[in-house]
Image 1 (cartoon, one colour):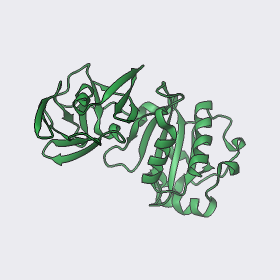
Image 2 (image 1 turned 45 degrees about the vertical axis):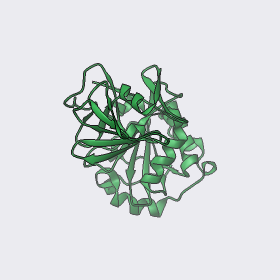
Image 3 (image 1 turned 90 degrees about the vertical axis):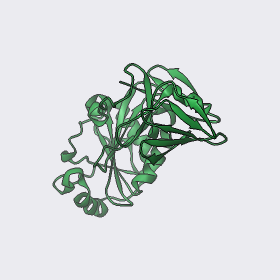
Image 4 (image 1 turned 180 degrees about the vertical axis):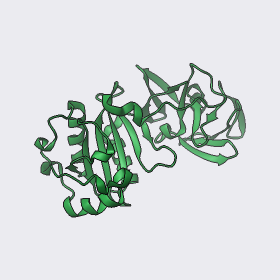
Length: 263
């Protein structure tokens, strides 16, 4: 396995790692990345997921820089693709095994995603994606028990939410509902074939097309994301089916598996 200089990583390894990776690695197909290159310490969940994704994204398995502070089970992939394209590609490849959507903390370039071993199953691994440039990305696959909790910290309770009730982030609805911030605490939720729903943080009344509906709970926000009551999606004609701690949200012919937030 090629080893990459951790000293050149500069925190997440962006500028220094980029020049070294460009010189020492090249994109490879899954046939060029045999399983034998994965460390013997790698957990089965991380190993199988890394090999699966390396073929899908045409990534090169490389040594994880020590400054990333990942576990011995982690596998790092160098991918010649933009972070935005790679997020969509990986999310599409995982399907219902992706628990929610990519999370990008404020003031960070890195994104994380929790992954289950089976559709809507328990967390088995997590992904960390760090951009190296506009066209190169480092994708880290690690076992869930190593540091998944650190990758997805529990958000603080926003004002207006009801404890014990399930909520979803607007970003979790990508693919089924398009959520747009209108400013001033207003958000528009739209899906194909129905009137858009315009909601206001802290208010139950919402505008549906030219009419008005009453939401079961008030929407909230963490200052950036819409935090919407799961039951409120019925106003858009969506249904949801529980699957353990996860939920499948279906809006017309589109559906997505996600894990609701319960404060």
